[in-house]
Length: 386
Ligand SMILES: *Cc1c(COP(=O)(O)O)cnc(C)c1O
Image 1 (cartoon, rainbow, N blue to C red):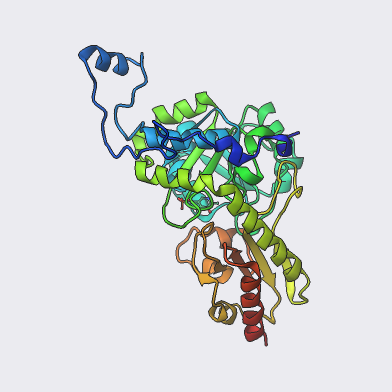
Image 2: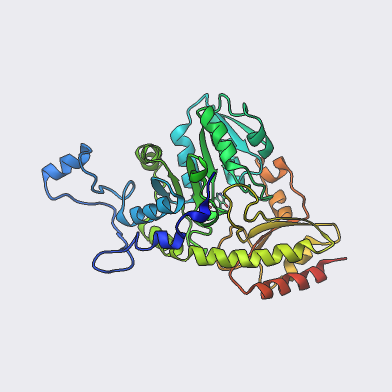
């Protein structure tokens, strides 16, 4: 059973990991595409795999490597590979391990673009994808029989339901299944799935890891052997590499991740208490510490389902601090009404497929003062109720 409480504090763990040379406390940005060699022999040794000097930034770059080292340390894993986006990391990881004829078991309410990747890329390439309720992953010991990859989120997108990760990891191990989880919501501050036995951890680093809504990036973390497969295959050949400047921003973001997550949690705790007490709130979806084994805290991303007395369009338009928008994990607070997601054009709409109430809204609680955010919601609710 994982006990993240006894691990070193994450901020302490990451101190100094990405320092530069000569006392520089930040690493340089290696803004270069290529690395040249001193001699024919050096060049040949590198190409033959006898040394490991970077050759070309599509595969290796020291600034990116510094970020990858921080992420591996943060998740308690052996290695990490950075990507240009969360979807770059997710697609490259799935494509590194899946072949036509394979089967994926995926959670319901998976991130909408991951759902579209399953339906629009994997399925046409001859890979079967089945979606299962979370309870089936936990309670059906044979669910993963014949499956190649178990694709997990905990909490899931939109409705934020949690999985018992040690239990699912044990089922996956017994059936020889590669288990992968999108850990963007919890971050390694609140959940380190590798310690629960999950093989591979994925992140949209565009969210809490960057923390400032100023870059799109992704990262995958896992065993040295699995990361070597990705670095050999889908990183270079799809080419969705993380850029050195973006990696530098992510290093900066990681250094404040712990205190930012603490403040997001404090604000979220206040919102959960007060929203749950309102008679016209049907549900607050916001798992916190001990909601499931290995989860040690609550992030600032939650959803709230109102009864029909709340008019969501009026609520959204009456808010002053909360902005309307996708994404999350930055300084600013955001609201995303489910009805907007349900209205999104196109055939492959995960919210329509898995079912979400149009009276649900997703809130990303930012770093503004909690009481100011609460006052904003309270007054907007007054304007929006009939
Ligand atoms: C945003 C997001 C992604 C996709 O990440 P990008 O960086 O936008 O490509 C994947 N999973 C979750 C849970 C997300 O919120």
